[in-house]
Every structure is written in C-alpha cells, then in structure tokens.
Amino acid sequence: MSQPFFVVGMGRSGSSYLRHLLNRHPQVALTNESHILDVLSGLVDVYMVPVGDRDDRLEIMGVINPDYGPVILSLFRKHVGKFLDAFYKECFPDKDFTHWGDKLPSVTAVGQFLDFYPHTRFVMLVRDPRDVVCSFMGFEKQRYGDETSRSELFTAEYQARRWTEVYSGLLERIGSHHLVKYEAFVDDPETTIRGIFDYLELPHTAAVFEDIEMTEFHAGQRTASKSKSTVGRWRTELSAEDLAVVQTHCGELMQTFGYLA
Image 1: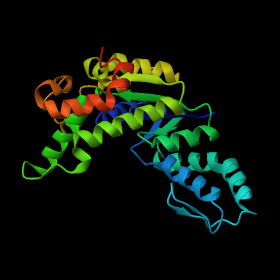
Image 2: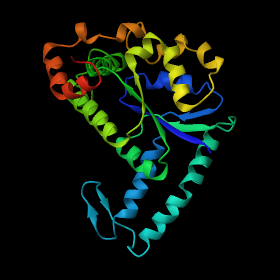
Image 3: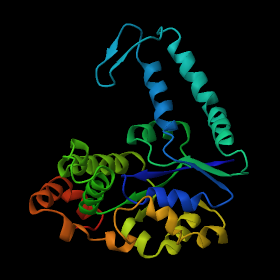
Image 4: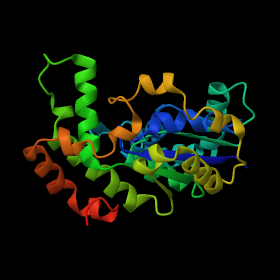
C-alpha cells in the first residue's frame, strides 16, 4: 500500500528546500503546494450543505439535494484514493514511488483528510516566529524593493497571528507527527533528512545527500546570504514594537516549541 505523507507548517520555514531534497528520493512524490487536499476538502464541504441553505462560515450556498448528498459523499469516500493515485501518477510519470503527498496544505484540509487516510504521516516544520516575520519582511523587500509600503500580509501582526493559528490547529488535529525544527535543519540537514527517512520507513539514498549543498536552489529562496545566518536574525532586524507583537501572539506556543524559556 502506498504511504501518504504531508509536510505541514508555516511558510518561510524551509519547506521548499525540504521538498526539493525529499523528491530526490526515487520512492517519493511530493507536490509543491498543489493544495490537492484543499480541493478535496472543499468538495466535502459542498456535499454537506443542503440545497438552498447557506453556510456563512464556509461562504457556501448549498446545491446538493439532501436525498443524494449522502450517496455522493459515500462514493467520494470510496473512490478518492483512486483519484489521488491517478493525480500523483500524472504528476510524477517517471517515478515508481511508494510515498506521495503535498507540502503546506491547509490545517482544515489536513483534518478532513485523516477521515479518509487515518494512517497518513506528517512532517511538521517549525521555525522561531520572530525569524519567520523577518523572513517574510525580507522576502517583500527582496521582491518589491524599498519603495513599497508593508502590506498586511507582511506585517508582524498578521504573520504572528497566522503562525499561532497554523500550529495550534495542527497540534489539535494531526496527533502523531515528526517534528523538524528549522534551526536544526539548516545546521545539519543530513541528520534531519535521515531522521525523516527513518520516520517514513524509507531507505537512505545517496542522491539526496549529494544535493544538500545545492547553492543555486538556495539563491532563489532565501532572504539572507547564508542559511545559518537566518537563525536568530530577529535580534538585529526586528523592531522592539514588532518583537512585542510577535511574543504577545505566539508566546505560549513559542514555549511549547522551546523558543522561549
């Protein structure tokens, strides 16, 4: 039986680099934020809202006759596996993979997917939210230059709230998982990858480790000159005001993950 697994967590936490390395394994097929779970989750939501009713939380108007909704949902549950198998075979036609999944699906979609695949495994990436905020701000500056004003998506307030929502939701929904801390990943990527392979019960493959220092990949992703210099960057880059905002919103979970004493 094929093994679904998903890389979950917050953006700017090393997920693109991790996906790149994992996909070097001949038995791994990991899509890049295809949001296939989000799409399937949305279909389930549609089936659950009766025709004529409106779900304000989901912003969905029901279109399914309640006489047929359970039949559609039953068939969906029965055949969703075949759909996913076909999807990943189309995306990775040259791979004879045993492990497949996506990176950074929504927390809600992850929770619903467990109803279909309770044996799903999760690799949870986490990074100090103070550095996450700096990385998002650096990404905005790198992409748009100094002239642009900070949009809501790149403010400390927004990203701190988002960080808390993501990790509190994941800890509530997914249960067992393999935790990867960004700081350990950039310090010793080979050990991190070996730990993930052991968790997924995959053989270690030399091709993955040969690609760890792929500088061309890093150049298009990071917002600092060297990956290790991104650890603790908040100490020099984050204003006192933004630091207070992050620690106010994220403090409890920062303690959970060991970022605050």
